[in-house]
Structure formats: C-alpha cells, structure tokens
Image (cartoon, rainbow, N blue to C red):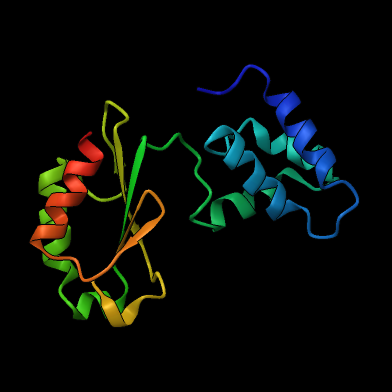
Length: 155
C-alpha cells in the first residue's frame, strides 16, 4: 500500500540529500528503507526533488534489482543462483526451498509472509550454495539448513 504521506516522506528524505552530488541512489535507498519499497508514485517526486527526468529515475529504479517496486514479504529469502553456487548444487536447493515455501523463485506469498528471490552472487562463493535470510547470510545450504530457514520464515 502506498503511504498517504508519500509526498512528505520523499520531500523530507530529499532534503537530507539536497545539494549532494549523486544523491539519487542514496535517496532511493532511503525511500526503500522508510517505505519498504519504491512505489512508482515516488518516481516523479524524486525526479522533481533532484531536478532529474522521470526517465532517469525510472531507469535507475528498474536497473538495480535491490530496489523493490512492490512490497516484499515480512521475511525475505534470497538464494544465490550464480555460477559458483550452481556448481555446488543450488539447483536442488532451489527446488527444495521452492517446494517447502510453496513459492516459485521471485514471488511473494499471498499472505505476505515471505518473498523468495534470486540473487546473483553474494560474495561467498567458497562456501556455497548460499542464501540471505532476512539479510543474514546462510552458507553451505543443505537439507538441515533448509528446515531451519522454513521454520524461521514460517514463525
């Protein structure tokens, strides 16, 4: 749900970065931290605040995968699908997690409980397959750790 005071939120956050060079990314991160996502309605507000075109702001929001354009679940499971994790068997982990969560990758449960997302490298290649669960890394994924993840996000 888009906050009723989105104009005020964006304006207040934009004031924090006023006059800074390269303010777009910090402002978008601040909006996402405050609202939980970057609503499309924020794009013209950000463009006006930073004297940029809507296309420039939209291009940045859609280019970087970390910017959410929809609300995420209360829990977020990000599974690394990069080459090193693939070589270490993430395909079977993806199938098991998807089955246990009842979600295909890159979806959020209808009740908003969990989002299951793909990422492409967490920088933990030596200990793969890896995931981030609510921003905490989980390495050397196996059946036991899948059980723990599912229990954690089901609580």
